[in-house]
Length: 363
Image 1 (cartoon, one colour):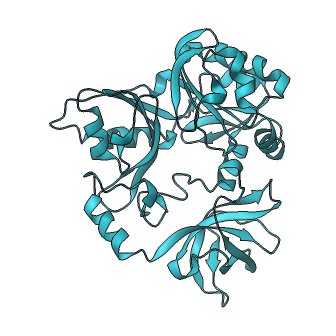
Image 2 (tube, rainbow, N blue to C red; image 1 turned 90 degrees about the vertical axis):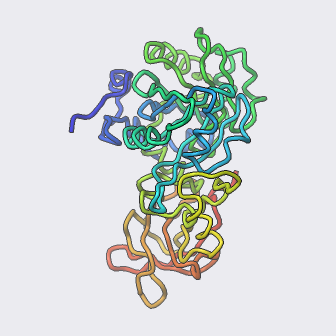
């Protein structure tokens, strides 16, 4: 398979990034070290090029009705400038993808999907347009996305826009001027738990915008950040990663996505998910912290005190902020209460851990 390159691939090469394959793209994984980049975002401000993400525009009189049909959250609660986290259920009880829904107007929305699922998601949602006045446009290949994250993000970016960044509430956005360009989507969203903004620009504007952000952020210590730190940052917050913690075969109810599963409207597989929620689930996705020293990795077995396998790690790492091993995985519901003792099999050694309340790092 031929890997795609980001429009700013050459910029990341010039910055000395270590480039590796991810989700069908050549992606910058780190520029200096994962630890340094992680701490930069937690304590100051960093910029990620996440232009591999997918964007679909949904337009038409039935745009909201269409989104209600394919996604589990209640899109009727949206208003212009509001963002919603949701997911696309499949017909087998699993998840096609998780996504963000942006209401640009009552008849225009933007869906932001995971890079590895762009084609899958497009093909899936395209099945559900029958009988609706709706038009779908895939703008993924013509759109760049920069995530500027960290407690100093608003200060670092304020000189580039007339929008009052520090007044924007979480999960809202504005179409505004930015770095000399008009109608740029600036969104108070992100995947780090450190606060900040995501900025959507056309490919031809991307390099100028990137350089403007780097220049404006220089007094605040801005650094480019790779996927390595993105993963440790999101895991410290207990955010799911598609392909690890949620998949085509994982139940969204077991994955803790009940809070974005709204049975106030009819959507794909709603009846089956409602029955599952009412009956209770046999297992749950939990976070855990290692008490013994060690690093949990994906697919390591989770065990009870007798060494019997009860589940497996879906995501795991050494938390730079906490200085200990953390992870997520599915366990039987009886083991899901915070404080419950479990064990991680690390190279045939059972390391003691305990189920933790998410997020691991409190804001």
